Length: 96
Image: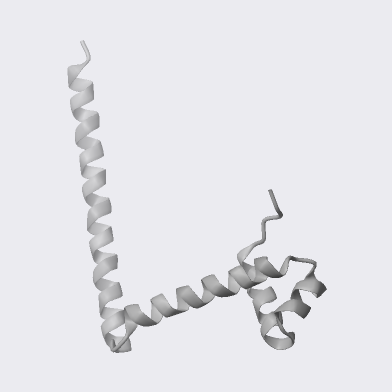
């Protein structure tokens, strides 16, 4: 298995590749060109998915949606806590 790179290392390698080219960056950093090009491909896919997800939506809409989702997550976490407490209560009651 090859070396694992951190997200920061990948970002820096991709930044260097933009400046001096993929092959030169790979040689300078001592990584395989295929690895670097794979990172670049994934980065482009992620960027395209992000752009598709926010296409035509205003910043205000995205902020409001984020707030709504945070509230929904908070409610779900509270529901889980209530269910865990109830489960603990019923487990204690079943013990002889």
